[in-house]
Length: 365
Image 1 (cartoon, rainbow, N blue to C red):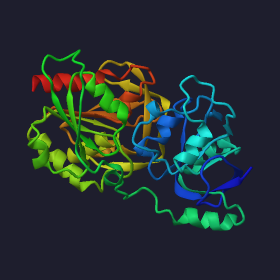
Image 2 (image 1 turned 60 degrees about the horizontal axis):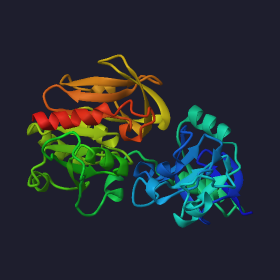
Image 3 (image 1 turned 135 degrees about the vertical axis):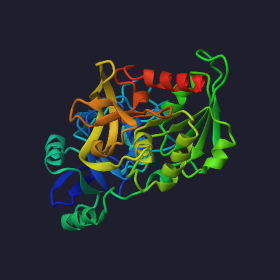
């Protein structure tokens, strides 16, 4: 069995076995605490330029299938796990886990102490890492990790976004009498977001990240959706300026994850890089208006800086892990954002009301 190495920029390294594509890959090493959903994680564009460490020890037992892709392909820079299952026993399995990793060209390492790695990241913060199947020169792998510039200042949304407009129109009409038109900015949009919005009978037009406001307004949207995505939100000037125009026109806006951060910046706030971010499917978030605690899915390395939030923006949700801002709502425009991923359904439906709120905003506009 082929060996592999994970080297970190601080000189720490781990030796294990290769379970994916041969070669090497570099990115920011993060840990995800979800017990399931490895295929959805690997195909989430928000993990672009990130090497994902899964803290759950046994991965691959349910295999993979064509239905559970969250986008057109895998985007994660690499995968780190404790143990790869030898069997894929689910009736939904179409491609064994290891074959999936090879087919998707994911460099992956197993048989390392992921608990030790996770504790190291929690202690020192997110680190650049390099996975390689060339284990003869560990010092070279460490030097490769050191060359990674980090996600600060990286505009990655335009890199993972669709290049063309496309339309998704549901045949379902369970909640609305008239079809509403949503223009969704693709900063790294997940498939299940589109699926959920479509269940309300909405016509959804997905557009590239850098689409101009004039083009979007010509589509006569009832609402603007700002999707999740990878990288630093502050360099996405094209999106921030467009959002400002929509806010001035009082068009309903809903932002998730990166979209939430972009909405905050367009409203006058700033964002900051977190020590190791939030990645997992078991994060408690408090709805400040009701006092309810929601179990949420999270995937972000940046957060809205509470000290910079202007007076016309209300904080609606907070993380119960670190008290960071998880939701905002504008007082002078029909716009709101949520940092977590309500479409991921870990609760399973704790946060689904945020989609219903968007439909009501558009219906009442």
